[in-house]
Length: 403
Image (cartoon, rainbow, N blue to C red; front, side):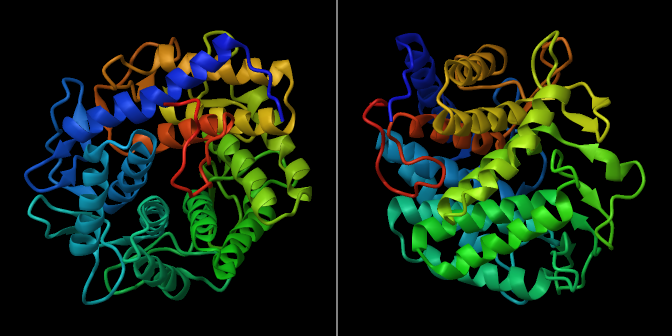
């Protein structure tokens, strides 16, 4: 299928992919890397020095494992392979609880447990990172870790209502029975990644379970919004129950469409259209540009700050729209979002602004090393439009358009 991009549009797409996996990756592998112990840094300050937080999270290691794996796939630079393999060693050597199983939330500087909580969100991202590492490098040692983690999720986090607890103590006492949207979304992402890597139908079944939670509990009755926080009865209660994160609406639009393609259930594609329509209508700043961080179910602005990651999710949603409906309007919207993120958020040296204020002025003096995951997934979907494998391609190949 010809997507009919103009030379300028192709140039912007190439610029974004190369910025992500060359310029940003280089910064992460140098300033964002502790070479003496082979570990990624949790956060950089504005002057590119590591922030002294005293901890590092397993979730960030999982995300960085994904990011450096694809940086190597696209560039073949040994630097990124070294980062990925050392992250795998760090994760499996230091973060696993040898006594009780499961992954610690965070470690101290000396690799001792800092926060021994076992969180669902972190377990999802560790499985996600392991799946991409396995797909790119073919390291069979990653597969048993995926199996162990999924067994933990299934046996320790599952609740009678059909969803999963947000967190437990070190020895598996549940820390709440409420339904949180975000970890379930990223479990779906992880399971699709694992299924595409292993072709094991059990993981597609796990993904289908996440989709059932989405359709039956997280999505509003009019199918236009996704709720963030539900109580122990899976009900949206109080002001917290009204909160909507626009970036997650775009992310769900993309994820549901991906599930529809992978599971060969095309009806889901039309079912997710109202989500993007509502996000475009109620969550974009039509005056200054950008995407509001938080709104409520009525579309009222709760937070007018504009973090970088919702724009990456919008880019992923727009790549889906371009593939499914390759109109000039869709192409222009995608390239407009790519141009916006490059001009407003991305620095020439690979740095980025994590937050902008309503007027698109920088509003943050640090860079979390969890963010390249978001930018990386968006760049993979842009590469996919030009023959790359995409976020769920799970192949060690690349588009010829991105040398």
